[in-house]
Image (cartoon, rainbow, N blue to C red; front, top):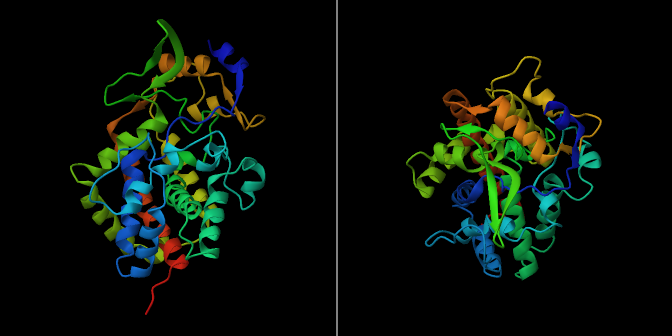
Length: 333
């Protein structure tokens, strides 16, 4: 099995299937930004007016009632994802490397999250009073990508599509292959659930929220952001990606618990292929090996450590988003 796994490679042009942070994570980031803009009526009014021109997606996260428009707009980019826009949600820097200042020249040929944050920020800043569908799309992308770049698994690849290809045991739930039942037939998809990326996107965010409502959670995150404003209030997307990448390596992968077999390398060594930084071992071979042999486990210690990463990352994302929006639409005296 291991030899077969090592021999078969699949180009990483396969689109990622999960959205960073899931619905609650992205909503939380946007809500934090909105709360931090409480004294900037100019920004709030422009955001509301522009997002009124945003189309309502037919799929994706449910639209919530009684929340600012920015909260519902935060998940729009996932609902309209296409082959063109999919690479914009992440930057795939190999896990064993660091995010260098010139990372975009190596890992951004089809566009990536750091590049698109600047693109849409600059587009909005160039025409701050333009209330049009084009600007609404730009604003919705910017809101969403501010969240994406702070999800550690959206800033790295371990030849596993940001953890999408790593089945895990989560809360005693064993990974199982997803079976497709279409046209009266049964198809083995080669995809497993739970998997690492999905657990970070959704399950661990829900654990961070605990019993809080979305609004209560955003209040707490905004308070945390204010406490660390001087430390976190940076403006460079490459720096944000480098920060998240380190967290992915140290916690996302570095603290995973699994049952190694004799001669089995660490999970990072197993997946890493420096000669093919954009390659991924074929899903059916690799995922089956990990699910059946390594038993990668999200235990209580790992979950606690991950929540300790996720909570400040969401607060940072909200703070930095608010700063970008306030720069585009400054307070008027």
